Amino acid sequence: MRWLLAVLLLPATLAIGQVVDGPVGTGPEPTPLPTAWELEFRYRNLQRIDILTGNQRQSYWYMIYTVSNPSPNTLRFYPRLELVTERLDVVPSDVGIPPAVYQAIREQHRLTHPYFVHPTKAAGAIRTGRDNAIDSVAVWHESALRTSSFTIYVGGLSGEARLVRNPAYDPDAPEKVSLPGPFGTPREVTVNPRAFTLRKTLALSYRLAGSGNARPWTDPEPVRVDWIMR
Image (tube, rainbow, N blue to C red; front, top):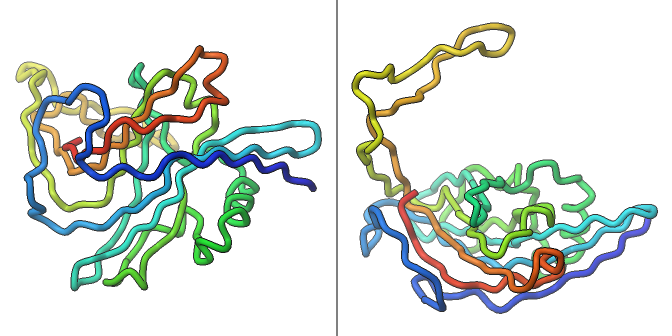
């Protein structure tokens, strides 16, 4: 089996809070200083990898990241990275990605990230200090980036949360309904919540220049990095 690897390196990471361009969102905002546990998240901007198996080439975009625990206590990390397009399509990372993609990424970065682990093994306890940091990756198929702009939301980095009233709550409608579950077992699903729990989340905004046909080969340009409540 022969691999064709084509990796495009993008500009260095923006500092959190640095504004390059783009509108500022509205709604609840995180506190200026951390009020709960928080993990340190370092990352490389999106890179592209092309994999050729036989006569078929598939392209993927991936983000290498490192998570460390600066607190004196052991914390637990449950990574949740989602790409949200300008059309509000939500694309979770690492869905339907062949194992060969992770093997190729690991080989590509084996010198700089020798302890790289698959995303399924990134979750769990993180002991204090950068010596105990976890190196992993989030991967999306190139079809997810065929819009002019998108944002990657990184959850699981902070314990800060806020309960917010649901403005669309209908007191006359049922809060939960019963739907068929696995093997016909009924399960309750909340369809009319009184409130939502928002959690402190890192938002990495990007834009893609050019026409739709050119976007699979266009480098995503970092626009803004913010902490938000989501």
